[in-house]
Amino acid sequence: MEATQDYIKKNEKKFLDELFELLKIPSVSADSKYKKDVERAAEFIRSSLVEAGAENVEVCPTKGHPIVYGEKIIDPKLPTVIVYGHYDVQPADPLNLWDSPPFEPVIKNNKIYARGACDDKGQVFMHIKAFEGMMKTNTLPCNVRFMIEGEEEVGSSNLGTWVKENKNRLKGDVILISDTSIIANDIPSIEVGLRGLSYVQVEVTGPNRDLHSGVYGGAVGNPIQVLCKMIDSLKDKNNRITIPGFYDDVLELSKEEREELNKTPFDVEEYKKDLGVEELMGEAGYSPLEHTGIRPTLELNGIWGGYTGEGSKTVLPSKAYAKISMRLVPNQSSEKITKLFSDHFEKIAPKCVKVKVLPHHGGEPVVTPTDSIAYKAASKAMETTFGKKPIPTRGGGSIPIVALFEKELGLKSVLMGFGLDSDLIHSPNENYGVFNFMKGIETIPLFFRNFTEMSK
Image (cartoon, rainbow, N blue to C red; front, side, top):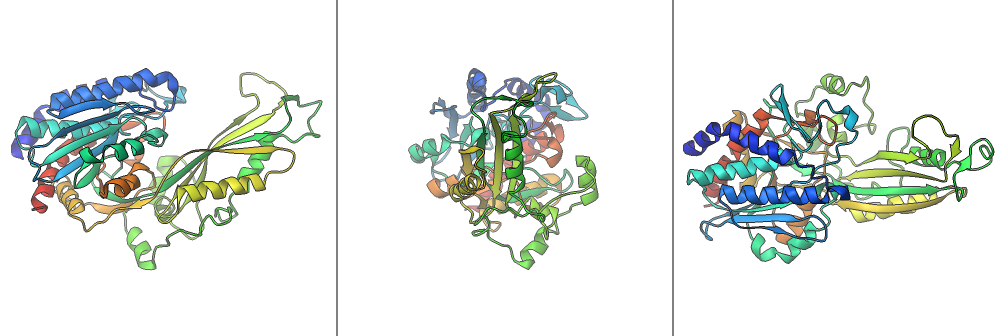
């Protein structure tokens, strides 16, 4: 592995230059006007895999955005690692809050600023460059398959179908994913749990047209105000979700498990300072680490209606809308939670409005084992490059496809990410440390070596 590490160190500038070219592509999967750009990003990934030494590389069409597949099978008798990631990104809005254009990457304070820098282009590209390093130095110790999709940010709705149709070429021993974070650059960690997701849009309709707020105001129900009251009623004074049956299937952790989780280094004052808030707000009886790791949530992601342009327009709107996400924990089902939400939201609507709940996408929660060969291989690799043994943590985000990999392929995943919570993913000024990018490239080949040796 010494030759691989030398190659990586000598090619840092080349790796960064190539990553910048990928980051310049606005591969926003949620917005149809970027369809061609998403396709360009897929082609860039395909070309990068070919140049790195992968074989049978192709851009696989789906009903939505394409999946890039590639492989290097050096010996069928050796273990096979399947690398998963995504090349699509979140919308960059609001653009006026970016300090530099989101698709014109720059390095400031040793951080790469661009949409997708961390989530997930930077982390996907680590795997391609680590693979390149092993190929160029003839040190790849086992087989590898790449499965890089373009719809993770919109629910991976077509990847599931593709996985089911391609089980024969997705035979392997473990799924390796870098789409998560570590506690800090001097406190490595590996996520061993992810929350599930139920994402919906609601539509509240009052009168059959927009009305003059002077002529009709006070007599007719205002959909925006009604929607706000309905949303407010979804949590009680203890920030506990009020939807009947919402907590029925929640897997509660034991006292010992909660105590172990709360041993994770966490400075609440620094946390508040970083966020610019004076006080935190979460479900009563749980710590911030538990709020974001082991408890389900309901969050309002966006709300709109009426007139929001410049100046004034005295309108009583006909419609109001909101986007709502619910993060789920082990034993909860996204399908069941979506139905519980829909039934409850329709039930609490006053007769002055009509309500529609439009399910968007979802995914199931997952917990990965810490006693597996793959986890031990990842832990040993990170301990080598960071100089400290990583801490197992529970992540607050969702990667909906992880549960499907286990169901359809029978494979567990290792969530060996290198981002930081301060990287501002999904926000303006998303960034990714050059340190983290290079540390990932250095660590991944060690995982391959460790996994191969431990699997003998």
